[in-house]
Length: 246
Ligand code: GLN
Image (cartoon, rainbow, N blue to C red):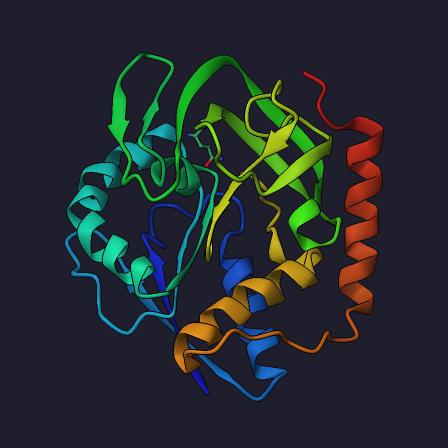
């Protein structure tokens, strides 16, 4: 089957190898006999119909400011797509813009599109380092990655985090949680890129995109993932050893 990915602002929000996430999704789709078609959606572009999975990466405050106003013009189309079952993976700066707003260190506030129940305010010191999460919603499986953000993200009451912080800062360095998920929408600070070292999660996102294609919930049979598991182990060890320290 063909899975269509709408890659938002690939020329602006791509700061930490986010293209690697797209490459992993493509490889893992092909490994199951599916095809991934990636359509860039940038400044001034209309949101095409028929997108199964949206992806938006990370960026500095400057790039976020460049895309925030344009993203607001796409909000209704993105919301309708998500309500019709499209999946969404948002990383770091893109994650922040899926909330209600991102307020930078100078106090200027960028509008978000309110797809995720959260808001973000930049703090003085950047939260940089390796991070390890436990995802109770996925049977306790772990996610390992790298974070680099000034933003402190606060989830609304009742919002679902992506995971519990086992090592690292997470959303705000205090709540003990990282990221946010709502249905088939996932937001996270984990860069690195995220997906090469977290095969199970790549398959979760891919299965959600496939569910949009077929109209039926999907589970993908796991792949060998020896290299991915080894990369995960290295990343997890680093996080336990040195995550969450300024
Ligand atoms: N500019 C945002 C922050 O500093 C997001 C950074 C990023 O995408 N890595 O929090």
